[in-house]
Length: 109
Image 1 (cartoon, rainbow, N blue to C red):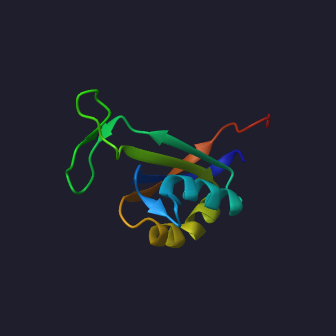
Image 2 (cartoon, helix red, strand yellow; image 1 turned 135 degrees about the vertical axis):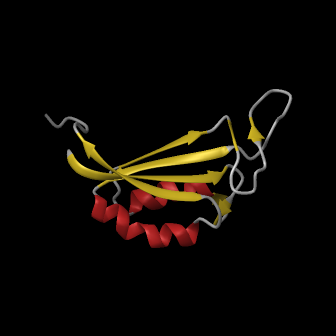
């Protein structure tokens, strides 16, 4: 998949759910079913969103709703086709894309 691609980033809360699953987990499997090349989920240790409520993993300030960040990489046309559905699935959060150039992926020379 080397060449022109897109990075889709989706920020959601750890406790958000969709169809009885954590939202981030639902999205991973949904994107896999859609044939997306790669998805990685990162758990934030601290952050806030539009509501300005601070979520943190600091010992004395335990939060049960840390930021979850999905990074999704594939061809631009595949990513762009999924954005309307993703925006319907994600009730609140941040969804954005960045153009990128993939130089190496997997075992490709």
